[in-house]
Image (cartoon, rainbow, N blue to C red; front, top):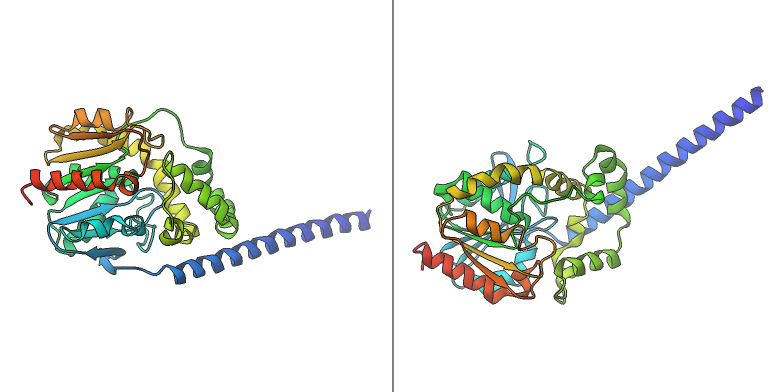
Amino acid sequence: MIFRKLGRRTLSIAALGAAIGAGVFVSDRAAKREAAAEAAYPPTGQILNVDGIKVHADVQGSGPDLVLIHGSSGNTRDFTFSLVDKLKDDYRVIVIDRPGLGWTDRMNKRPESITDQARLLQAAAAQLGATRPIVLGQSYGGAVALAWAVNHPDNLAALVLVAAGSQRWQGGLSGYYKLTSSKIGQKLAVPFFTAFVGRARVEAALDEIFAPQTTPPGYGDYIGVGLTLRRASIAANADQRASLKAEITAQQPQYVNIGVPTEMIHGDADTTVPLEIHAKPLARQIKGANLVTLPGIGHMPHHVAQADVRAAIDRAATRAGLR
């Protein structure tokens, strides 16, 4: 009996030791992959101190100020891949990493609501001298751009929304976001994703985002997927996505108060943020909003329909008296 108990205890200790060892291995591998990603993809712009938060902003070009806000899991590189080059001759383009993504720190209040993020990004833009910029938001970034327009109406000249999320939708949170936004998921699953998610899975995810179009050649290498796969970034993105539906629901009634010129671009083949659920109702809610529907285009018009996005920005600038 004594030896039987000793054996069970020994097995328990061994199992615990194996679990701890596995955890240490995963953590070490995750840390090494994070360090490699950060070395390979350093900040492309400047680091601002905004109310004690480090905010990364890439500023290029000259002309009317134009702020670009990226979507879920993204960073400034989503825009600097090719779009900024097509805008910087006519606009002073300011691309800012949202909290916890790219090279911007997380905020003290978590999860960072779209209202919190809009306040931070508006303050960062103002620090750069852009007190009344044109504000463009894509996907989740569109919800943040709308929060900017709702809460800081005197601090933007016009609004451009590209495949923007804006309305309450049916259904709950996906299993992935339920896991990665939970405390236990962030402790156990997120480090595993950081340590082991491979290139093939990343490329498949990008193909899903760009569908029915294809991922531009070189995009995956340029944007620094490893930055997105850092533990802190996965957690930040998950926390923000988990609270988004409630935040948008609360924000919707205020769209009628948006008074700046608003241009909207949305593909009718977008299955991530569907046109019928988001863009069409929003076009009715914002007085004077102009919606351009792109036939056959999916969720990434700023890559696959850049001429249309540029035209929307130009119209917004003209309507605001900036051109």
